[in-house]
Length: 113
Length: 117
Image (cartoon, each protein chain N blue to C red):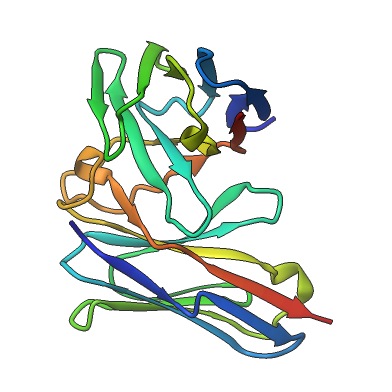
């Protein structure tokens, strides 16, 4: 089974700071997802990547396949970015068939004004 | 309107009761999933279905059953609820995986908060 570790587990920062959340996994994957879980509980997909880097607004996701590591960056952080950020990987070792996911425990981010 | 809906959104029940959580989707996806989320743990897969005739157990299926009534509907049942099934339950959908296994996003419902007393 793929082990997915996220760090830090909790992060509190001031508005405007550059934020980095890390994700590492133990075995090869076909894709990695970054998800955002709002305080109300809803989950939305931010990024899906299998190589390189993706950018959407103030969010940037990178992945290093050789090092089995991904980072999610938030530039110019804002209180509305406060949420739980979840890393999930797809691999043959995940349950759920060909596109099953193994999830990290999440990083709880709080951005203070 | 939301693409993936779950009912109920909140439910409090007692030990031993039978509970059904329902999921509907308008995305036209074949694949549907049920996950549970517990504090301090990642989401864990309970059951998944690749079409109406295909149901598979996930990592933590004991104590649960499912029904895929149609492409758009996937229900999760707790036959006899117990307190350690208190959790946040999510339904998700995805499209068919491409031959290269590329990049199929999962779309999540809003979640059902279940409390078993």
